[in-house]
Length: 414
Image 1 (spheres, rainbow, N blue to C red):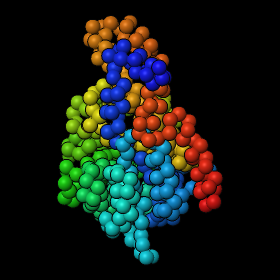
Image 2: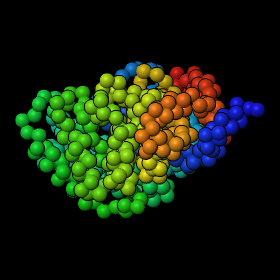
Image 3: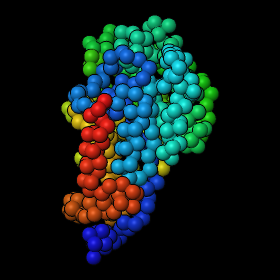
């Protein structure tokens, strides 16, 4: 009996079908963020990273061109099992023949190569307007700026991004999630919290006036609790973004690094699913603050996955990753995070939720707690290795050797 056959039998004794779990997971797309590969620098500007975010580390081999970035991503894809999407920020527009345009004037043609890349890899595309690292970010403000010219610039950027998102959906045949996040805020306690939020609301209203097919483009709005240099106030708070999403009928997006340290997104998922047909996630790993560490197979990642599965919401939750670590090999950072999210989803699919739910409904908290702890040592690793092999990805630690070889042959020569 192989280790997988043993694991299959063990799970079957609990009424769990490992074959069905692997098949279901194979169809769940996880969106991989392009900005991990080059430290959120992009191709349209040489401005320093701003907006209250920061990439730390100087590990060699960073991608500096579209070709390098796509090659790195392609290697990562080959080492990650399951269904995937490509998540692109607007600052990754690819200009040709010496052309440059402002972010308020970007067009679908500036993302043609991303569409070609996605098609070559059989994937859909997600998209994000880039409201940071740009000269038109004035006094840490964009869509909430009191300067009408600044605000209008970024409104036009948002509208242009809707058109690009619909282009992505039309070209790939897969719906595009377009996420709006702004860094706007203050380092010190503001004298007026209200007016910036009124301006932000008005700007969003104008962006959403751009016509788009709601079956093809899902516009999401992401909140944040604070940023570096923006510690005291952010315009796009959780309350603002959730309220606006509800009123306008767009999709709320939760980044699990964008809340107070004692808050957990896993607890918020069933609450939002109660009132929203779909929700979106940016999965990251904050350490003491929104530090965007590589996603680990930790308690919160597993609990997020459990809540998605418990709520029967694999088709209702858009799952994407968002972190940037320059202290380790950047391809490895992608692979580690993506594999951990998919591993957590597999573990969630192989948890006897119905039995645990019955314990809770019958107020049998002793058995609920005891069984939860026992289930943690079920032989998930053997099922995971089998899943990787069936998906054509390396099992166990085999993928590390491929990244090491790529670093020597490609990345070290940049």
